[in-house]
Length: 300
Image (cartoon, rainbow, N blue to C red; front, side):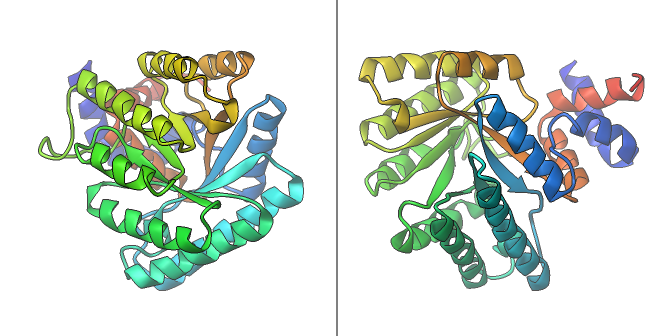
């Protein structure tokens, strides 16, 4: 089945958009701001917080990056207007990181300044390894002005992450810790599932022990259950951490965590770039790509 899923992933560019959309609908809130906000409202009613991502990445034109910056600000303003329990996630390549680092810094600073004014928060997503150092640099710079309004994502499958955790935790960084999904070489990333899990828990312990706020982003039962034990052993206040999951993934497990009174946040992507986002994510995760094949032979 693994070989079959990889084959489907390699053929995704020729799969009809309607088929990809069938699979993507579960994981994406829609194309419009209204659809994104409606999804957040539903999650809030279910006792779940959210983080909203306006889809778009690897931007190469200044005008597009400026447009994406303005869209992010619009999301922050609309969430505040509606009184939603949600923050914002941004990818720095959508704000111009591939164009010019200083240009991207100014755009990120604008977004976080807006969040600070509105009493909100911006999470900078971590993209693949060529962007790691620059992402850390820009978050550090923006935090000098807005230490309570911006945080970073680190990926446990990267060999460098423990070192990054130690350095950033000493500065009081607000973290989201995930496994990581981008395809990386064995020289810089752990490949064995057990090694990734071990590094995840090692990094999570370092974050907890440094007194940092942590978004525990995982759908892995081993990591969820281990994190719960670590929380109990350290007697951590529930305001010190939260669990995080992707929209449409393991909804039953999400509901069980909420029922146990854990704080939980759902990652809610929306936007016109749903197709590009979906194809990239499906290619990076061949196990999900297999759903595309099943969708081709299923009824709506």
